[in-house]
Structure formats: C-alpha cells, structure tokens
Length: 446
Image (cartoon, rainbow, N blue to C red; front, top):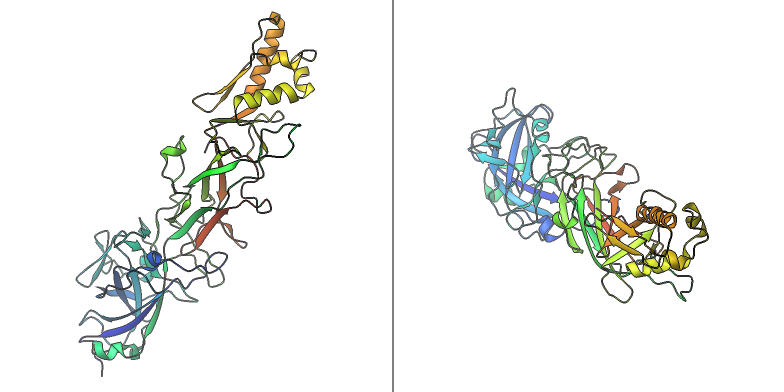
C-alpha cells in the first residue's frame, strides 16, 4: 500500500505538440521537441481552481534530447513527507526553464528568485498562469523552447488518480501512466524563397519590346515587426472551441532606417521563435527582396514612374527601369503629352527636354531629377525646372535593386491576423502568377 508520508513515485507521459497548428498539423523538428530540463509542480486542494502549490521537484532524468519523439515517459519521485491523504493532487510540468526564471529551491518553486509557494493565500494555477516569462527559449543546445501544460477542455492540470502513485520506482515504472499535454510558449515564423523570378514586374517596358522581361530574384532576407519576445507562463484566454490566446502587450517594433542594421533572418529558411500576439497591433513580416535583371546582373539603381499619385503606393506599379539611362530613354520616347502640357512644354520636342537630363538617388533614397538646356529661353528653363521637380516627386528609386514587402501574420479564417503559441506560420515566395506573393513592385524603404 502506498503512503504519501514516505516516498511517492509517479509514472508520467508528457505529450508535446498536441494542439492544433495553423493551416495543417506540421511535424516539429528534433530541436523544437528537445527537452533538456524540467520542473514538476504538485498542487493540492479540492479542485484545480482552488488547489495551491505544495511542492516542486526537478525532473531527475535528461528527458528528451535530441527530441526524437513527441512524447516522453518518465518515472519521477515526488517530494517526501509533503502530501497528506484527504485532498486531490494536480500536476504541472514546466520544461526547458533555463531562460524563464523558474528554479527549484528545496521543495519550493522560485520565479526570478521569489518563492511561489509562500505567496499570501497560497499559489494557485492562475498565479502561475499569469507570470510573464521574458524569453520563450530557443532551439540552441541545452536551452530548448519553454513548454508548459496545454489547457484542455475544462482544465489545465490533470488530477493525479490514487492508482497512479506508487511506493517504489520499480512499481511506478510498470504501473499506470498519467498523461500531461504540454505546448511550447513559442510560435514559429519562417519565410522561404521558392521564387527565381517576379513575373508581375516588367523590366524596362518599351512599346517596341518583342517580349516582356521580368527581374530575377537574387536574395531574400526578412525581419519581424510588432512582435513579442515575452509570454505568459501558461496560455491564457483559451477555450476548447478555438485555438486562440490572450497575449501581453509589450511589442518590439521595427525602427531601423537601414534594413541591413536590423537583425535579419536568412532566405535559406531560418525560423524565428516569438511569443504570441493577439493585440490590435498585428505582427508583421517585412521582407527585403534584392533583384537582378534578366541577364542576372545585380541592379545598382532602378526607378518606377507614378505620374498620377503624389505618394508611392506599394504594389500599385509594375514597370521597373533598371538604370537612369533606361528611365530617361523611356521618358524621352514615351512621355504622355499631357505631362508636357501641364508645364508649358506642349510644343517642345522630347529630345530637347531630355537632351541633358540626369536622375540620381540621394543618400536618403530620394530621387533628384535635373533638366537643363542652354538653348532654352529663361521662361522655358523655368518650365524645365518645374517639370524636373514634378518628375522627382513622382519617381521612386531603389538602391541595389532592393525593395520591401510587408505581410501580416494570419492565424486562421476565424480570428484573422494574430500569433498564437505552439503554431507554425510559414510564408513562401513562388514564381506562379496565380499565388501572388509579390503582386508588383514593393516599397523603396523598410
């Protein structure tokens, strides 16, 4: 007969990644499944809501390294002389706690050095649930992604039946097994490039072209905007009907002027792990696409002309000029007559207007157009200056063939945009025109 006043052992199966993932169930990698350390917390009381934390023990075994399975079987000794008969026991697992602030001292659970067991009125599961961890972990060796109990239909902690506690480790190892479902606090975001060409952008469009040419993709890098590096210790705001959560509102925002100065992920399918964000400020992926022309030369400067808008509109234009010379040649040969009419140049030959034209991109990415002709009268030169200012204001330049696209992370059709823990969000760029990852020209700046 088992006595709680002496050694007590429990046989546990910890199941990882049991929750529904975005779009389709996606198998976790070994690094995502790996468990390097863990803490087992026992709550005691009449029911889960009122039960208070009584003991915490470090899980003895190196649990699941390198993460070859989504389930882990352990036989664990509970703290001795701590659990009397007459009340129910509930179990909470905290895994990969290195970067979270959770530790064990004696039989006590500490969070950032503060005892949880000794809180006024006792520590309940909701007290643990609302603790803010400052890192969701990583896939680096000996760190791992933080995991905790995955809320189920009506409960967070499973109750320990009396027939799952044993006097010896040997009896427990061959006895009844209790299952704990856990989930990662992290959500995974990944951008993959499968595109070799952007067929929704036309290069150097000319009426005389025999075929439409499109730019090739040289490289894709990306960064996140409005994302959480922190998370609640256990998912909050969960209901069995949906895969959603309540997140903290402490977002990191993209502020760097130069994309190259901001931490980037490789276009070679690297993943980023972040906390959930279900606030109104939605998490975004900003993608930098560097283009080559169709001869596979990297572009130094390229331009787009948008004469009917004062501001550049992402994805509103399709025609890209891959050099100042190409752009000036287009304006000289194809300039709409009404443009000249606006600036008292209606009777002036295009060749004279653009005879000594120059166009440059300054250090801030602004386009500066210059039109000069010494044969013009002062009045005509004034018109040229006005026209040059118009072209400067209605031309967008791209340095080194780089342009930027922003995508909000969409969780599902029910909730729309958002990020929820233990989900995988993947964005793939493709060549196919039907799946328009890049529907036209992106922004000139992040």
